[in-house]
Image (cartoon, rainbow, N blue to C red; front, side):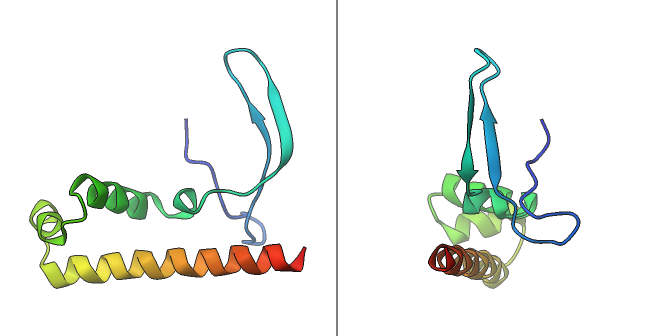
Length: 98
């Protein structure tokens, strides 16, 4: 399976999920579902977050694993945190408009 897109390729707006399907029994659930924040991250950002969790949040361990300096890994984490915070703000703003 390929990564689910979270941004419209035509206008770059946030996509929503309209239908979920069970491959086992064929059941389909329809509605207007938001894409989880984690899935809106790039594949590289998702891999970074997964490594961070596997390292129990140890930036020192992350730095050793990635071969980067501690400050570089800290900056990478801060960038992901900032992106997640912005996405959450946009999601809250979207809910307030509805």
